[in-house]
Image (cartoon, rainbow, N blue to C red):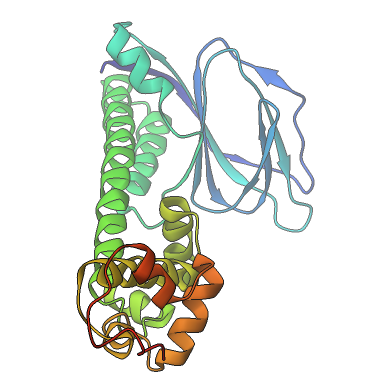
Length: 267
């Protein structure tokens, strides 16, 4: 992907600084070196803090709204895509409109290098800045792809772990420790993947396993309850009826599996 950077500035906003709505005919990025406020892209207003990097495609309106007490120090980056191949246009179209790069030393240092090189204005500075910008954009795109892949991988690992350990008392704290991520991340992955909370997903898994054991095994209700993670067969029977609409014994009998010797074991 060949990009040409035209301008990168370093601008300290005054208290409460605001721009009018701007529409550019070139690609634009805005980086927050420090300070806070809001940045409007199209019809969406985004909170903006130190480390945020925004991307605005050509033809999309944008407005800067700096905080009164802690106004922005900003860099605006104007650039064009020189290789207008469908693949490159599609790649840029997929660039996130907001990414915080504060913890990504490569991206943060690349912007600092671009600012320094542009304002020194030495021979070949323009080419160097364009090259740095290309590296920045490609790294952003790579991070987006890898981030999605890592999220998918983590999702699969979390779901597999829950299935494997469903008979145990799995908690958010345990999952957070095992996968080194926050409880909110666990909740978001579970909700997106299953539509359920951890508690309800565990109940769903346990009762599905119980249904299979009731249909296809000769195990007693007490044994099935224990295998499915229930310490009390009475509680197991109560929860099974609540969720399935029938008792475990009735479910077993309706499935045609009526092993001799365990019909009366309803606890």
